[in-house]
Amino acid sequence: MHKTMEEERNPLQRVFKRLVLGGLFGFLASMAIMLLFAAVFAAGALPAGAVPTVAVVSCVAGGVVAGMKAAGAGQGYALWIGALAGLLLFLLFYLLGAILFVRLAPSQNSLPIFLAALGGGIGGGFVSTAAKNPKKHKIKR
View 1 (tube, rainbow, N blue to C red):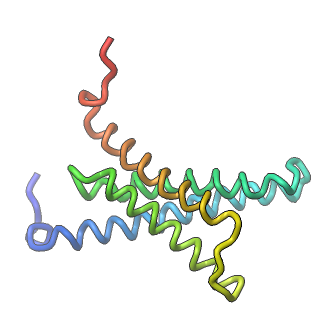
View 2: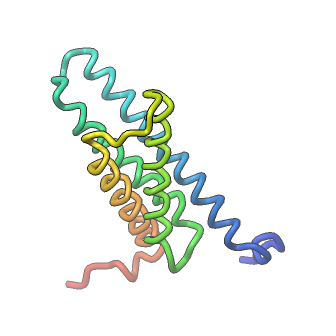
């Protein structure tokens, strides 16, 4: 596969673009999961005490999507790029919270959401790498 002149000139720009796109795709996936669970909560199928757990689960899923989308940019740095995509996802959530609640204050759920987004991003980077190189990640019996 031949690289275009733009890709050869600035690979960092390509990685940054994939990182931002990965963070946005992860954010959208996480919001879609939260919207789905909002309908479940509105129907009364889950108690209101499950909201923090649902937020963390949706952040993990969004982090995986962000990591998988972003990790295609770096061949040898997929886990780091996935972690950065997870961090970007957390920052997007934090910024959205600051806009909606008009203050930047860490909440009780900030650390679990941070760890979920970061771990999901790393997991997405790993899954992306494993999908590209199935022979390296095969279990030997």
